[in-house]
Length: 597
Ligand code: TTP
Ligand code: MG
Image 1 (cartoon, rainbow, N blue to C red):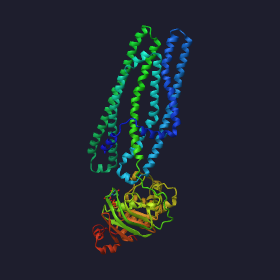
Image 2: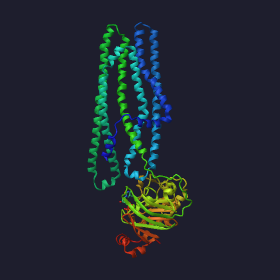
Image 3: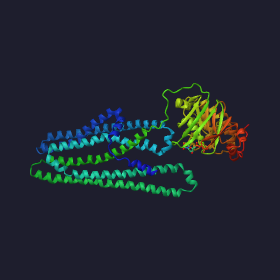
Image 4: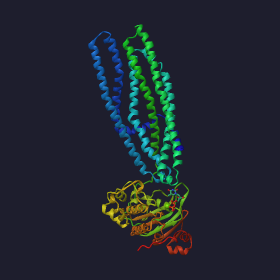
């Protein structure tokens, strides 16, 4: 896991990539008037600071030296005005740059989420969840820095430097050159710092990713950790990851601890140079005291934006890295394609046909081989077979979670690839092997927040599958809060809710991947009854583990290693003495058949 993140970070390193930047700028485009406004304010505010030492120079040389009180007062008023103006502009700047940043990343986050929803399951099979979450959170956040402070503030720093240089050279060229003589040292130091910090930040990010994924996995598997008394081992593992993370931070901080005082030192040297050289010149009367004063202030002012620029460089770099990863996700085109002119069947009869279907999750590793069968409207077909035979895969392709490689799947004689995905899925309800409940209420989990499903339908569905009784006994009934993954409900209860969910949508075709987990006898009866009710009046494919479901099916399809080996009803298949017979002997024979009256 860590290595994966490592290589992912390693690829990156550019602080500026014109292609990425161009694309990033398209996100700012809708808000460009704010950008221009902010840059405009920046130019003004950047000039206001450097203006003050110049005013001081005038005050000292023109008015103090000549004891001109009125002139001095004027300068005082000007200084105060510039301070107030600066504060006022700064307010707008801060507000609008943050506004800009938040607006932009909001849009990007929306786009990313919408895009992720459209991706085919094939993509999620190969991408760790943690990575997608990081894109939508951390990576987007680092773009905020770029949009809100990066782009605009870089202008501000550059303008401040330019203004200072302009004022300095305007006042005294020689003294300016003396001040700037320390610049090569500073530039070299900054270069070194930037490189070191870049490396250490990369370490920090890598260790953080490791820490996050460890935490995530550990919390998800908490019950296993506790059952197997693995707390101590896990603590030790965590300790190592945590110490690595700490060390990487301390290293990063170390460079800062050297760089910041270093810049201070260099700027002090520059000040020393001005006092030594400029002071001498003043004594020799070729320089005024006012200019000396102003230069001392400029020197102090000059080094801050330079120091900040290297900080901005890091922001740029992180943002470029993040945007590259975000765009990579946005450019991922693992979609299940939708036809341009989809066939819209009216009301479905519910006939299903597989014609020589071949399917592989990974190219050429076929998990379904040459599957052909036909289900008439209203029939129930049970699919049986050993684990890994391809039963779940069979239903995954019927709803187009994955597209098949060869052959065709027809619903009412129409190839499912010619239908609109949404339409197709509307006709088919699927109850999966592991029930997934969302955090919300029981009601929202049955209706899936679909407002078209009226309250009565929710309750009647729950009643029909036998879930109403236990829901009604909950303190808040249908408004009872369901925790993430339905942790507060029993396995059987979750099953019943998922049945109610399927029924509330009243599908023509029902797919049921029967759970293997055993529940108590009472719930078992409830579930069996629920399944029987679910199947009435619709075409159904049931991946069956319960003998009762299998026996009641119109047809049984026996799968073995991705192929259909036998078809027939219970009696026929038993008489055949083939795979089904063996399966029956091994798995179902001892299964106590609970008679449902
Ligand atoms: P399944 O179709 O999941 O097998 P099954 O449903 O018959 O098994 P069980 O009774 O345990 O539910 O798997 C068939 C093969 O496809 C198996 O080798 C695993 C592989 N597979 C994937 O590679 N990716 C997937 O998402 C799934 C579901 C299966
Ligand atoms: Mg399965």
